Amino acid sequence: MTEKDIETQAEEVNEQDQEREQAQIIMTWFQHIQEVMKEQFPEYEVDGQIGNNPTYGPMFAFTLTREEKSTSCGFFLNEVMRNFQTNPNAGLWLSSFFVDLLRSPDSHPLPNPPQSEDEAKDLLDKHIVPYCAKTVREEFPDQKIYVDLELNEEHGPVLEAGFVAVEDGNNTCALPLQYLMTLYLLNRDPAEPLIQAMYRLYEENNLGQ
Image (cartoon, rainbow, N blue to C red; front, side, top):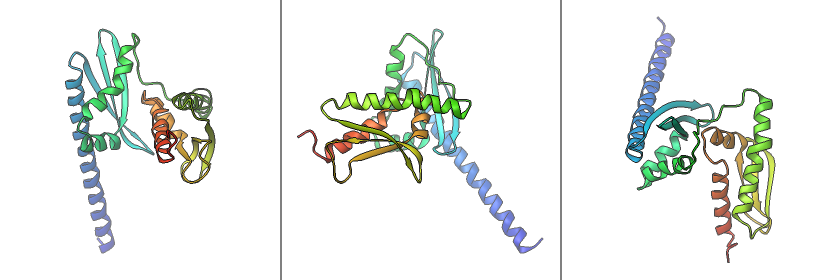
């Protein structure tokens, strides 16, 4: 066996160790969050699953079931870790995504992912993008809002929004369409991060004055 072969084997073993370690971290977080869900919703049966998005990394989805009715919602591991490390009310943050869904008399399974590019385009063009544009405009009724699709070199197609009144400096925010689609498929509100970004612009530019 040559020195190069030994180096290659050592690298492979190292990679496998890192993968095992990462899988262990993901599983530890998953089990922790599932326990938090059980504490937050003791009257429900709590099931969970782990997935992976090629762009956004590991994801968790949890389903609350009671009397034939089930409600599912998903999260990115990185946002869960960030919240549980910095937010003293992380359990409430987590449960808040289920509260509105649970108020509805209907079950809320995770939406089926589009099966083709045409289906994905339809979902974005006819539902997600118009919904985000309408929701952002309703959030700031006193402002004229600019919403448009743009192409970003790094992130591909993005939904861009901004305040028409702001002409200089940081006057727009943009989110990748793929990210908005992923939120939708996790039963999350795709307009929420756009609204949060718009509030930051609103405050930075003193539009409430």
